[in-house]
Image 1: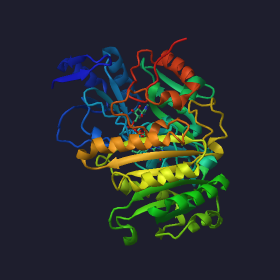
Image 2 (image 1 turned 180 degrees about the vertical axis):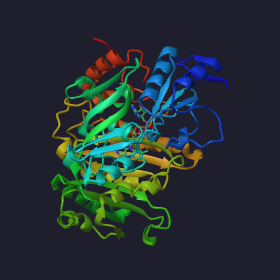
Image 3 (image 1 turned 45 degrees about the horizontal axis):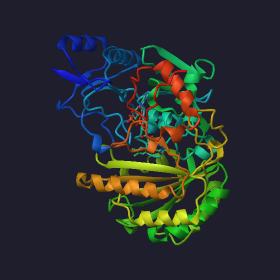
Image 4 (image 1 turned 135 degrees about the vertical axis):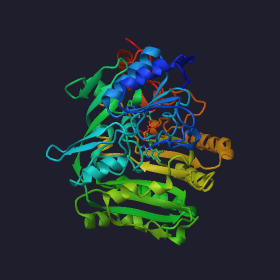
Length: 479
Ligand SMILES: Cc1cc2nc3c(=O)[nH]c(=O)nc-3n(C[C@H](O)[C@H](O)[C@H](O)COP(=O)(O)OP(=O)(O)OC[C@H]3O[C@@H](n4cnc5c(N)ncnc54)[C@H](O)[C@@H]3O)c2cc1C
């Protein structure tokens, strides 16, 4: 086979059969060329704008394969992408002309119930972890769609239903095994390589390929109280004002988000919401008594006249996968932007309500997240993830299906984001970033704030040539 790959400096390198055979022999997992091999991609990119196979994929079976792949990339100066769960909104794990280090076959999860720890391989999906940890009545905070990769989500922070009580995903990371750019394997923890652990807690995929994550676990479920109350979207202004009042006073057991979207006319969804734009007050109360949790969530069910109310005690794993059908892999096109707010004013709510009525496609979401509790209990400089004060975040999850709509949908998202800068504090959440023609560094200055200099120094020490640059990129800055 002839394989020509892009190098990190933009030049191209043709790899001979001999070179490829040598790499292949060093691997346990398969080496997959680009183009149509007739075999479907096991874990394709979620965002359909970035579908298609990488120029060359190393489908890793373990840390040893990752070491071989990183050494190969480093010695040849190749542009290397890394895939965990493939859910990068910006398509950062696609790398169509380069080398992809694919960990999607590495999905093992081992739970130590006595020490309340879970060791998770670098390609695991959120659902893999929830399934294994819930077998012991335990959980660690993860995101809201179970097919998302643990790796990208955690390295970028990790918002989900348990944040207010137990913090971000990255706050619960206690140890990681990392293959660094020079091919060395490091273990980062509070005692070994604490700088690297600090950087991995929010600093993205900049510092190496994480082959395993060890998370702290907490008693959760198996059944928890859930609120999912759908109101007419036209009422969002009033509903969100009531939601704000509730959210500002809610106990840390409650993590809540206001979502707006239009449900498809799909079997399984109640007919009353088929093709109906709705505002959904979503919340989880993660305390041990679901009946008490439902009492605490009750005000969210009385913010107006619901179109439909799904609220009830529910298995935690069912909540964690309930949104999956709305976010199929490789079908939706996406460009998302988010922004933090110091205050959710009435004017900001009215602006959001207007934008929610003007969404470019039914699958586009306009969301408001309430943040606080354990997330804000962490000092902004204690982890790379610096955003520890804003009580609200707004995200425009612009998602559509028609390729002909690409330009208009991206433009809509940009203009909604611009309008929100009147109310926001300018800081962004990098896990929700679309990039398109923006540089890979876009948003890192506001997202990392004062932590960016320390991140730049750690990057310079571990990856001076920026081998790992297909990410929300931190430029190596020695000194
Ligand atoms: C439908 C959907 C729902 C989402 N919901 C949430 C949510 O509830 N909360 C939230 O916080 N975020 C959410 N996100 C955002 C998500 O966390 C990020 O897109 C994240 O990057 C996805 O991780 P991944 O491993 O699936 O991504 P991938 O596309 O596999 O990787 C993205 C980037 O992560 C890095 N990376 C991946 N694996 C590794 C590894 N093993 N070692 C080192 N670096 C690695 C690389 O830099 C890579 O470019 C959601 C995204 C989607 C599409």
